[in-house]
Amino acid sequence: MTRFATCGMPAADQFQAWSDFLQPVVNLGLTERSPGGFDAEFTAWDLGSMVFCDIATPCEAPSRNWQHAANPSGDHWYLILHNSGPSTNVKGRQETRSLNFRSLARRSAGVTDSTNTVALLIPRDLYTATSALLDSVCETIPDVGPGAMLADYLLMVRRHLNELDQIDVPALAAATKAMVSFCLAPSMDRAAIAQGAISITCFERARQIIRRDLLLPELDADHLCRAMGISRSRLYRLFDAVGGVSNYIRRQRLLAARDALSDLADLRPIGVIAFSVGFADASGFSRAYHREFGCSPSDTRMERLAGRAIALPVRPLPRTDGSSQFEDLLRQLRA
Image 1 (cartoon, rainbow, N blue to C red):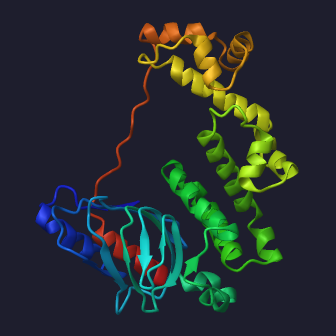
Image 2: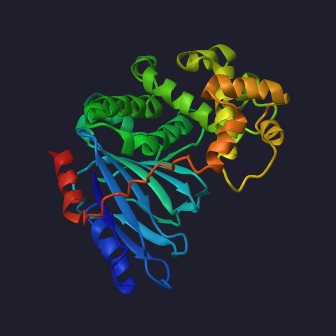
């Protein structure tokens, strides 16, 4: 993993350092004078055949002008997903979640206010058979259908990259290659190759909807089918490996109840907590809770009050100056 951050630098030097770091691929400029510093962070993961990047910039910073470098390090394509804040291109289009597919070999420019971005750097040699098709893809990918699926996939990969074992990297790279190919140049053959990644992405999307709507009484299989636009049979297949849709939702509700019971600041009666996470019957909740965790809800609360619940430590990210490492990754892709 390569990491570059401007925190710790003098505020007056931060944006210039950030601009210098990204100079191999893009030239940056501020649309107006910054009132303060530019506390930004760049993290890159080498997937062997491609590079996955996470970019965080300050929300209070002014907009940035950007344009591809005149002599970029390679002619790679890149997918870039702006996941927060407005993103405006030179034609004035504005979106809250914007997915773009571009080639560094082509001149392109725009303005962005995005504060959270993920990007995938892709060497052209990875898609020799479909390079002409990919070159014809529109720069802006609509956030519907395959485009929405691809955006969801990128966010899912980002959430789990820090948990990835090195032995799993080739499989992730192969799945990502198949997913990009299917979503940008759909065909039946490419859909078959990408089926594993598609299913994982659909499951992750369902999981996020369950997390978002967990406290809604109407959360069930029908609710998920409507929210995702898929059939019940497809939904059931997605959840086969985890015991089915209903069991998965019930477990998530029980986990939410356990979190509430473990919270010293949450003084609600157990019955109220049970109702808040979707259990209408207190005795049914207690039975389900005991089956899931091997103890009663009141036991969990007493354990917490006795101070026997242990918080898991948070592992900080290593801090490095990744400038030269980023350029090395770009050279590896070109090679």
